[in-house]
Every structure is written in structure tokens, then in C-alpha cells.
Length: 442
Image 1 (spheres, helix red, strand yellow):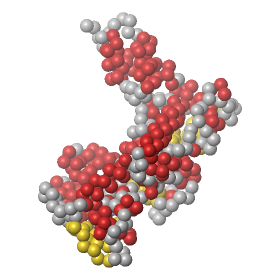
Image 2 (cartoon, rainbow, N blue to C red):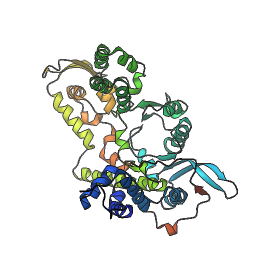
Image 3 (tube, rainbow, N blue to C red):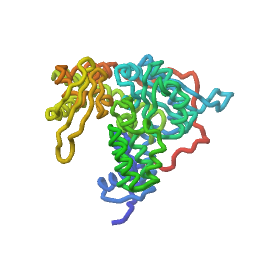
Image 4 (cartoon, rainbow, N blue to C red):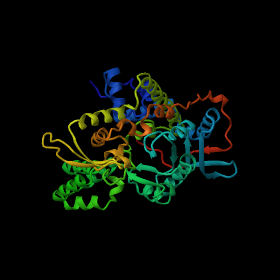
């Protein structure tokens, strides 16, 4: 069978792809080739697949140029039909005679997300909180984005933890943003990115595994032991990790700011998945539609949990229950009645255990490090609570409460009306011809 067929032109192939492209923005070249094969029995060349996919995307989402022009109108419509949606622009003058601009930066945040954040942990990572399009990822663009975040989202709130990768622009910008500098707040690194950078340099699967283990360990003594193991494998790798501030990337030295969250995966893989391939207005539309779905899905889940008389979110319930089961075989020695302090000895299982941990109920801390990280009494804390006749369930942080969870996602969105009802924006935006549009979609 031949590689090409005369009737498989770009228009026909693009028509086969429309539904796929609309449903899956991540749809790539390999998917195109497989779809054509499934429909026709023929293979097509990579170049034809590329052009057909480009055509299909433009048919569904519009061209890059038309999307740039449409963006101010669409974001204005979002503000019109969803009042108190925040939109901030930073333009570059393009044609002073016509008043046209090219996009520099644009930031937007939905009112429902801003209100929902008030019920969350003081952690910027998980909730789809705010979005931005910038000309490039740099110190200037990150400083601008963090200023908008501080102005419109944080609003002077104390104790915010920001988790991100180690991009030089972010780290430098954060140092100049008071909301993320102690004592107001902190900046932490995504452990997955640290491990990825580490593996890119040393390309050793054993070392990569040790890097993850040492970063995710909650006890300092275990952190030290694994670091020594890394040193025995590679002194250079040990020194590379040792140069990074420990509180930035390790759970053991974090001080409880991370709330047990080590990576940015949760936020990255939801609302923005596949969106970066699309024209600008399509990206904005996708953040809106997916945020609506994200909130609606979680609000429905909270209703089910309330109906089932569930106290906490699934995560907290599973952690508390598992640790309660583990606590049964611990032994306790009480020390201070007023501070409710005690030592706990764990039982040996398969070579593990027979360790001693110190719990101070009044301070809500255990030397294992898990209670301060997760806000859920660990197995040692639960055993001590029982010894002092304290209800351990009352020690679970309020942000795990089902009503808190429901309140986070209870704010509603409103649909955007048909484009004929959108207002004319106060400025014109045009595509910057000096910016090269990617020649390889996917």
C-alpha cells in the first residue's frame, strides 16, 4: 500500500480532525497520523499531517492574528458577564496614528477563584487562581505577574507560600516581592523540577531516585542519612544538592509551609493542559471553561460528601484513618500534663520501627514532621491524644473540613453571551510581526 493517496489532501484530512482538535487541545502530529490511518487505512507524510493539523486548529480556534485582535473583546466580555473579574494589560505601542497596540502582558483572574482562595491553605499552587500571557518568560514578566498576584489576590494576606520551578526569572522576581519574602511569606521549589534538573546533569536513575527520596523525607535524621548515601555515590551530585537552600526544596527543612505539597503538578495538569498550543483568545476561553468545570465538579463532590456525613476531604480522611490504624501498636510515655507532651515508641515491622518520637500536643507538633506539614495528627500524635483523653479529630486543620471545601467552590460563574453582544474594547490589539509563531505545532 502506498504512503500517500491522491484524495488525501489537506482539506480532507483537516475535516477528519475537527472534532479531535476541539475536544483535545493536546492533539498532536502522531494522533493525526493515527486518525487518518484508522479512517482510511492509509499513512500520510509528517508534513501533510502538520499542515492539516494547522488548518484544523485555525478552523476551530481561528488564526493567530485574528485571535490577538479578538482577545480584548473577549476578556471585556468576561468582565461584563462575570463582574469583578480582574483583567490587567501592559501594552506596547504599535501604531500611534491608529492607536493600535501589540500585547506585552495580560493578566486575568476570575472572581470565583479569588473568593475561593480565601478558604484555602496559604499556598499558591493548587487552585486555578490567576492566569497570564506574556511575550517571554523573564525577570520582568515574572515581576509584573507577581505584582498583579499581590495586588489582586494576596492583598496583604500574611503567610503565603509560593511553589514554583527554579527558573531564574522567578527566583529573582520573588526576592523583590515582599509578599513572598520572610516573614510575610516564603518561596519553595517544586521537587519534581529539582529532580528533573538533577537528573539532566547526572543522568543516573539511582541518584534521581535518591534525590526524590531525600527531598520528600520529613525527618531531618533521615534526610541526613540519604544525603550521605548520595555522597557515597557521587560527591559532585551531593555538592550540587547541598548548594540549594534546604528549606527551598526539602520537606524536612520546610517548617510546615508547604502543607505536604511537594510539586506543582496538581495545578499544571488541569486547567492549562494543552492550552499553550492554542491562539491567545482560545487560551483565555479554555481557562474560563475549564475553571467552570473544575469548580462545578468539586462543588458536586462536596455535596455528596456532606450527604454521606463525611467530616473531611477524601485525602484527610484517608490519612487520618491510616495513621489511626498505625497508632494502635505504638506505646506512649507521658511527660508534661500541661503541655501534653509525651514520647512514642513505634513497633518493629519488617525491619522498620522501634523508633522514638516526641509529641507536644499544645504545639501541635511531632518530631516525625508529618503533623506540622499536613495539618493532620500523625499516628504518634493520635496515640498521645488518646493517652491524654483528647479527641484527635478536633486537631485536624479547618481547611480539610467539608464545609470549607464546599465554600471554596461555591462561587458561581456566568456564561458569556454570543459575541454580537460583546462591547467594543477601548483599544485595538494587533499581532506583533516581530514575534515568530511556532513553525512546529505539537
